[in-house]
Length: 238
Image (cartoon, rainbow, N blue to C red; front, side, top):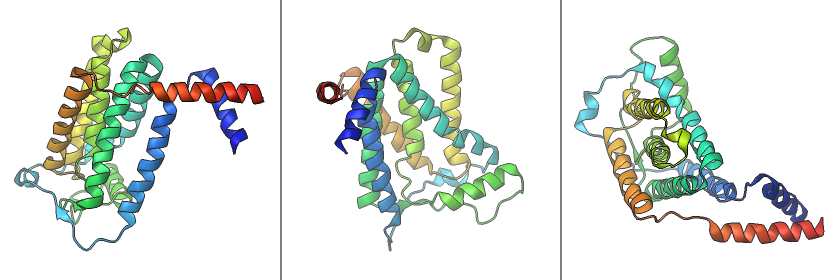
């Protein structure tokens, strides 16, 4: 096991990957925790809904921006990591705060949204995509919306970055439109209540004040020092 860790340390040192490991470790814990929460049988769920949800139309084409969320988040995190390490640290801090709060809410206040259609109004490629999505993604533990929170966190990080290419207006417009479409998609395909969306945006506003205005991001400096020391030990034993 230690030999494997030494190899990882040397590889990380050559490619400047020290900063990425805390996020990887966090995601392993997050996914395991979320899987356990979803697997636990519950007898009662808090219904999350608002009156406005009943008047928001079902627009199946919005499944496209919804599933594009995965690419948006991965591209955003990777771009910040490679281009602007300080911005990456701020983004990683935001994501960890939001997803950790989501896990605590899901664990101690299980919730669900009762908005999914009993029957699709049309049969087309988009409704079939949504049907497949609903089979794999339960309507439970949806508050606050991680789709919305992570999208807004990535968008906020790129807009606040000092990396020159991120300041180019065409890129900013594309990413802003993309992020808005993803956020709208959560309610148009009945994956989330408007309450999920508004609370996620409220949470990202708090993160903005603490992390970007008050510079409270975790910079991983202690982790870097530990990783560097481990790499030096690995090189001596190589």
